[in-house]
Image 1 (cartoon, rainbow over the protein chains, first blue to last red):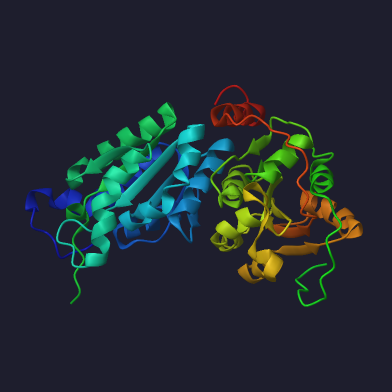
Image 2 (cartoon, chains in turn green, brown; image 1 turned 120 degrees about the vertical axis):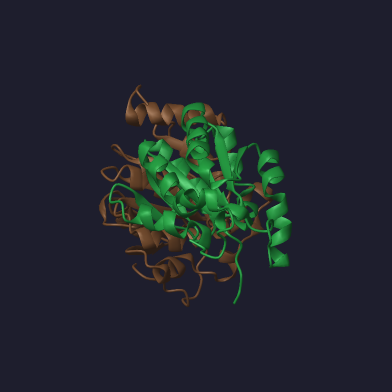
Length: 183
Length: 203
């Protein structure tokens, strides 16, 4: 991932491997449809999922499409996950009523922008609003602030989604992903 | 019928939406059906309730995407998404997303009255020449149809069931509002009923 942020040397291993840790949970949880709008923070996870012939990777034009795809997947007996950046959460709000009204399981993994060391002011409004807006929309919000917590947090969210028939989001902190810099 | 011939002089539509939906789902076999919010949901209920119907009462712009997820999960089943022109217009990116996946078992059919019937029959973009079949063809749909007549509808129905997809059709209908026929709006019930009918009691 982003090699520029290695300050927390005690977590170096999970800093480098957290996308692999999350991938392992998705495999274990029998996730079959991986729907996404491409994002730098999710690059490795998307690559791993695309390389798995047991997973169907669906590229979206906008994040709200993914909520529909995963509702259809569940109707057809398959589990899925929606990968996006925090700005994409804003695109999802009305479509989230599909998940909450019908109690479709929905697992969303959101890479955060607009918080830790953000260089682009245009990312800040949606980044700062992501958690409260999801909660207002009826989504159970989890957060990963340390890379070492990635696997267990995604597992917890997956269980509450798939066994509790709920919408659950995991916000992956910008500090975990590494702050984007232009050089 | 294939492709989009949009520059012909416009004839007023003759097909009636309830008759169109009845034709689409008659002898449906094990086909799975998703209906977009508003009139197409009422049309599907009027054609006969069925546990393998998923009725939308909201989530505008999402019908084709639900059909895609279902078609990918159930590649041996035919999946029909029947929706309105306003609903389709709200999620046009779905045409690109479906086309990239190329699901052979998915048909997306727009029952096009050129109106937002729910909010008072205001015109949609299709009343002003916006050509949905041309957009689907340009996105990369395999099989694309613009339907205006009884004969074209009769020719389309077997293709909706069997032609290698993804299939897209827009069927021009009169802007009449037939009496409401309302299916359950309990999303949890409709979802669980659908899954039990498709997957059995063990979920």
